[in-house]
Image (cartoon, rainbow, N blue to C red):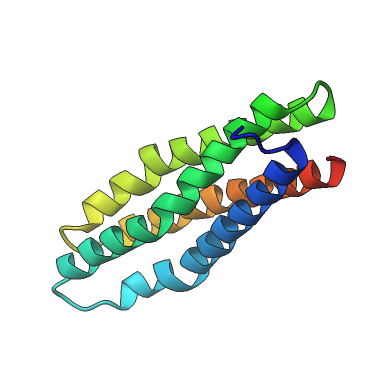
Length: 146
């Protein structure tokens, strides 16, 4: 991919995945729990959160997905290919949980804070963050074997 050898691509991928995992744990442990402390009007807060977090996540997340695909393309047979496939499956799970779980809940929270929706967001986000953490293990393993 882009003329980058597998081992170098794996290091880039590990770095960007590590950034994303750190960011996701920070969001899960620090930021999302604070939603419950925001007073009315809630809408400006939720809209600002969605806009700012998208701006922060977009480039590194795109780079993470792009390097995951590149690793599959550049992988030799065997363990490299298997781990690259596992990594891409986990990317798919993260994207599905985000699109089908977290994003719709954020959309519902725009109108007003709802403790039940907030609880669901925390549950969905924990699942997503754990899957992302699994991606970091796979990314580290890819560096280890390259």
